[in-house]
Length: 563
Image 1 (tube, rainbow, N blue to C red):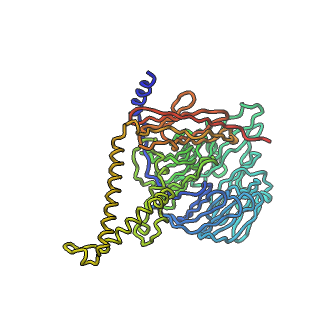
Image 2 (cartoon, rainbow, N blue to C red):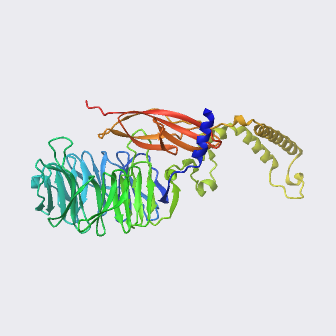
Image 3 (cartoon, one colour):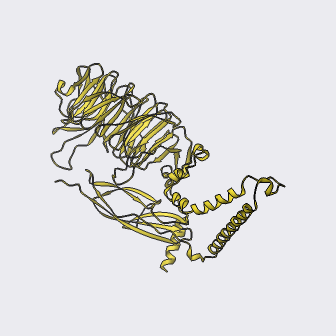
C-alpha cells in the first residue's frame, strides 16, 4: 500500500508544471574563474570586471555580445570599486585609495586615500569619492585630491548623489546638504525630536532630489514612519509615508526609477509622484530604466517590464551588478551567491530586443547550466594537422586511448600491409604486395574478425540482460552544510542535487522539500535564505516509471563570532 501511494503521487506530479514565464534569450558572456565582485562599462563599450579580490579584466563589448579582450592586471589590494572617468578606468581598493588605468590595463596614476574607496560619483570635470573612513573627497587630474569633509567640517558621510556640478550628501548625524563648487548651496531642515536617519539619496534626470528618512526612537519598536521626500531647488514638493526603505535608484526619462526593500519598484516623476510598476517580492539590489524598459535585480532574479510585457531572468548568484550597454539595447549582469563554499558564477548577457520566449519557470537556469564538455571544438582543432591527439582529450579519454594502444598498433600494421589503395580490377602483386604481405594481411583480417565476433557476443549478452539490471536513479542531496550567518542573522544556502547517479537518464521530476514536508522547488538545485538554526531538507526524484527515491541533508546556520 505504501509503494502504491508513492506511485500514485508520482503519477500526479508528472503532469504538474511550474508556472510559465517570459524570458529573453540569455547566454554566458564570461565564465569567470572566481567570483565577480565589481563591474563597469564605459561609454565606448569597454567592459571591466573583477574576479576574486584583485584580478581586473578589460574587454571591448559590442551590442551583439561579442567580447574582445584588451588586457588584465592584478591590483595590489582587494578591489572595492570600478568606474570609468573619461577614457580611464578607476580601480578603488579597501586600503590605499585608487589607481587610474588605460583601456589596455596600463597604470597611469595612483592616488592615496586613507581607508580606501567605498563609492564614487561623477561630475563633468571631477570625481567625488567616499572613503572607508566616511570622508568626502574631490579629485581631478589637474588639481589632484581635495578633502571636502575637512573643508566643510562634515561629520561621517554615509551616502552621496550627484547631478551636473551638484553633490548631495547625508551624514551619520542626519544632516543633508548640497555642495556646488566651493559652496554649500542648500541644507535640508532637520526633523524629529530625537534626530533622524537618512537611509538613501537619489536624483532625477532633471535634477530633482529625493531621499528616504526615518526618525530615531527612544523606545525600541516605536520608531517614526519611513518617509519619502522630493525636493526641487531647495523646495519640498512632496512627502509621503512608505512601507519600505529606498535601497537603489537611477535617473530615467521624465524622472527616476526607485527600488525599495519591500521588493517594489516605482517610477518617480519630476513632480514627485510615485507610480508602482513592479513587485519583485525581495529587496531590490539594482535598477535602471531605458526607453520603455524598466529592470530590477532582486534575490537571484532580474525582473523586467516594458509596459506590455513582463519577464524574468534567473542568475546563479544574486545579480548586484546590472549594467546597460551604451547601445541601450543590451544588458550585462553578474553577482555571487554570497557563499564562499561554492564555485564562481558567470557574467550573463541578453538583448532587450529579444527574442523572448515562454518557458517553464524551472527552466530559467538552463543558460548557466550548460556542460562545458559540450562546448564545440574549433575547426582548427578538428581539422588541424597536429598528431598530438592527447592534447585534445579529457582525462578519461586519455585513459581509454592509452588502454587501447595495442589495438591501434594492430590496425596500423594492417593499414601498412594494405599499402596504397588498390584500384578496381588490379591484382595486389601489380601494386607491389608480396606473398608475405598477403599472409600478414590475412592474419590481421582474421584478428579483426575475432574482435568483431567478441563485440557481437557482448552486444547479444547486453540485449538479453534482464530488465532488473537497468540502473535506476539514486537521489544524492549532497553533504550536510555549515554556514555562518551575516549581520542580518541569515545565510544564503545552495542545495545541489546534481551529484545524483542517473546513468540511464530516467529522472522525470526533481523536488525539494523542507522538514515539514512542504515542496520548496522543482529542479536539481535550490537557493534559499535561512535563519539561525538547524534545517533539514529532502530531495525526491521520480523516474519515468513513477518510482521515486529520496535523500536528505542537514543545513546548520550559526551566528558569527562576537569575540
